[in-house]
Length: 65
Image (cartoon, rainbow, N blue to C red; front, side):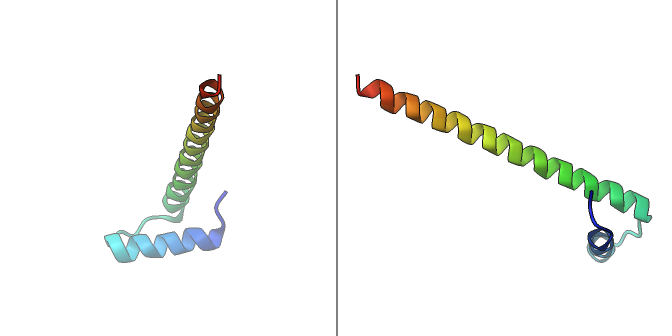
């Protein structure tokens, strides 16, 4: 969950950058969607790193045989 202060900051940014005056409920939804999106990106990144490390380790191990 996003803090009320951050939601207010996002509301200000949207107003200044996009000239849109959205209701706080809509800004809250946008903020939560952004958090979910970045959480997904982090999960993808960690999965890719784990796979890369797994195959790098396997390649190093196999090359020693």
